[in-house]
Length: 118
Length: 409
Image (cartoon, rainbow over all chains, first blue to last red; front, side, top):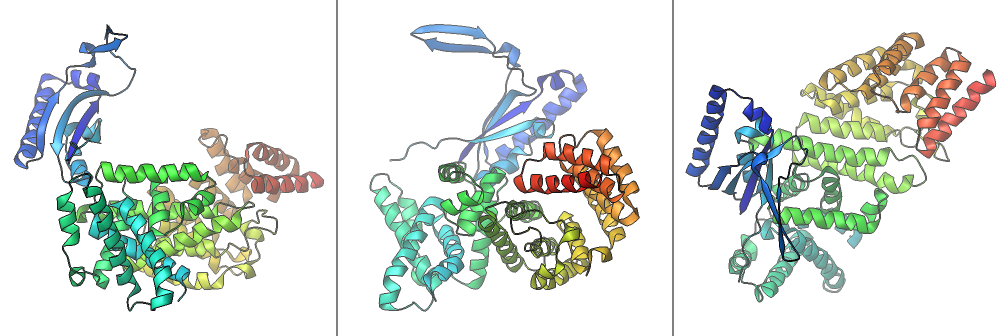
């Protein structure tokens, strides 16, 4: 069973860390990634650039509309993700709780639709 | 044995084991239902099987296998069929121990924290207690379609997010058991809080909650907090006949006819709590049960050990600060030390503003002013409470009190 772990936290909090604190944070994420690679749960995982870099695209009546953003006024922003393999939700939750951002932000655990059989 | 009591007794155990064998909530539920229908047809004709439980499990399991085979013709699910079809009757573990595990797995799955609390409650009543969707809807005064939707949605989440049908790992057991106890307690309070017309319907919730409490004490023996929870429910339930008048009006603890209290439930609840406390129960249920036990023990309202009740409220507040508990404590202090000490505490609570809009704050204040004979102020406070109260029995109770103090004014 595959799950996407969506990491939501406050971008400003991360920006406000000093260099040493940021390095420690990256170190912690690195250790976590390594550990789920070793356990065989890791599929992929990436950090996103801040929402200020986001662009939205829509196709309406065959025309492309491109806009800056979105910049929803939320306290937490999607900042990264892990794509994992776990035997069930309990295992996925046990992995999600170890993501360093879980301590300050929140992790949304979403099951992926399995490929159609047959 | 008639089939209805058999259904009551066996539904949960049969469903729990069928779920272990098949791992599919929806199919299992349908298949168990079918197995009971088959029993209704066959047993009167062929006689009762030696073990109704084993008969029902294997009938239900075969139905699930049939179902999956039928689907498999459209979609290849060979592995599932192999897993299901292979074990011979004798290989299926139907022992007492396996049955206990099955039921616990069922309960822990229904009360999984990944599910919304109201969904946990509905699912527990449906699958663990075997209540029909219509019954659950009636208990919660919800339209049947809404309740059915809620159950469909929660089962879909269990399937699609793959919630495990499993016991939580040891290190999470305490935390998960807290969740289970909360569901049981919510079922109870939902039934207990009902004091209006449909009392007899919602009474079923109290009975189901107590039944669940007993079942958990049986499945997880010697757990002090579970015992305390069961004791709490029994002790509150013991007052059910005394706490409402013939028209559903509220009768306060002080005015209740204690002869109406259910002595059997008290005789079970008090020693159960004592055992729990001896074995180290110290949670909120234990403290609340201890308060209920002190009331149960008092022959007359004036015999109540209010000083000890105050110290139990203190302990509750240390566990979890709450303005509502502070208000209850203020009322207990008033009984122990006189209305003016209670009024001072209520004034302090009032100035903090956390309970603004909560009708029981002016109601408690009114009660203490009434005890002091300050009729005019009491009437004002009753009017405030009346404006905030929403339930019919509470409004009637407050209106009656208001009339009384106005007459004395």
